[in-house]
Length: 238
Ligand code: G3P
Ligand code: MG
Figure 1 (tube, helix red, strand yellow):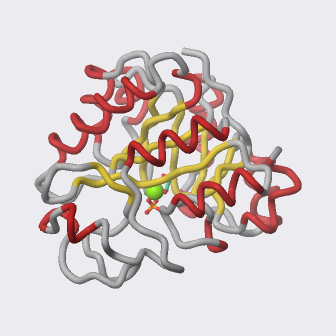
Figure 2: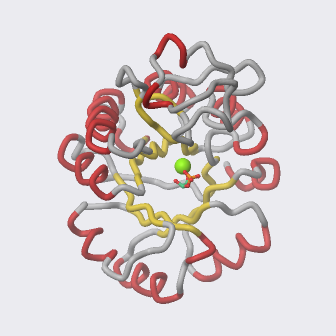
């Protein structure tokens, strides 16, 4: 499936320049010239996919408790920073489409909600990007979620995502019919890069906030990056 991956992907929406995983962050990334954003998607207690990173509300909102135990009426009234609400996944997707941003949708299930989260997000993504599959990229640390995305949204590209890439990643990559390999820059081995080059698999690293580190990774064969420092990389993002 056709996918043109920009080199720079704004991490959690607008990185450190806006409240994470908010529409303000996504809009800021686009305004600064970024052509791709990543965000995290989890289910509320009502089964609504929303943008948030942590299973608990405390770090990024003025709420308390678990996202998966909080109903929509309470969740959408919270402040996710600077008065920004927690966005619905559908809203974020529509904003990305309207702004021409490639959306890296990271399925981020709360523990025990892996299948339900992946099914809901994959089905919605297939509807939203039915006519523009090259504008979305689904990823998850949970292999089951990628398997579900493959089965329910086969036309949408997907990536394996690891903190430490396991030795059998090429097998998983083939099973998932994946497009790219996403991984933590701090744990990326030369062996994985060698395998990826042999298999012609693009490697995308998180989270790269230092230009010197970025250049070193590029020299090693990394294709693209997630960054929080939109200010440092905006000039190269277009
Ligand atoms: O998808 C790349 C990156 O977002 C993974 O780490 O914890 O920021 O979701 P995290
Ligand atoms: Mg993420």
